[in-house]
Image (cartoon, rainbow, N blue to C red; front, side, top):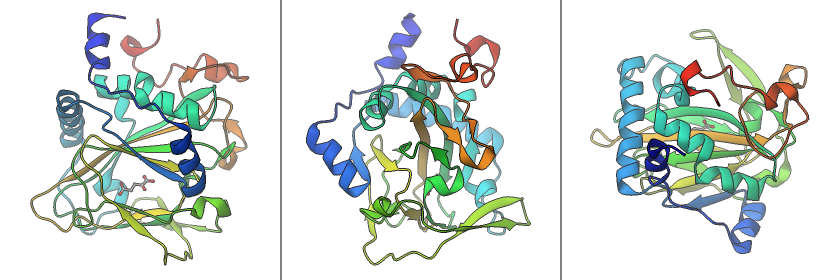
Length: 271
Ligand SMILES: O=C(O)CCC(=O)C(=O)O
């Protein structure tokens, strides 16, 4: 490991899960973990993510879509610390404990609601947007700011993952060819999940969740979203082609996953 890699690693804090936490995850479909980063690591992660965000995005547009206002994909292409966090950070060990020994990286993106971004993101299951089989992928939402109900923290329906995939329809938003999900959901049991900056919310792929807008004018709500899947996970919506992403632990039956590198610019590929 290079000196630089060691410096990145020292930004992260280990997240060993006990039996009680694993049992809680199985029964409620989510886990609050943290802190995941030390204060210096959090500052650096926030700064690298914000630099990338500012270069790519314009100010909040109330007539724009969620994709335009709040989402930036493949953030690990742009930030070295995100790459380390996504590929070698403590969440990879969490994934092995919740999914199994064979793990691949499935998604990295920013979901930012900067101050005044009042758009909500409706109830959904992550497997409704990108259905992966087996149905055990995890979404990890690492907060870069303190989050609460005022600035758009996540809401979940505890235990809702146990019903599996809920019926949904995709609606095409003609403004940006955006796919959104309309879903009838019983949200009587919904609870907000406020989190301190540098902590993480882990979600089962079938857990119902949403977020309200950020109605504050002085506090951002920035989240680094990473998703991990079984190394053999296939995309149900894409003729069951294997989801491409770096193999992080264990083995895969798919050579294209085992040798997958093309997502990254050459200097950052595996040697
Ligand atoms: O960042 C948010 O407010 C919601 C993100 C989310 O639920 C998702 O990307 O699945």
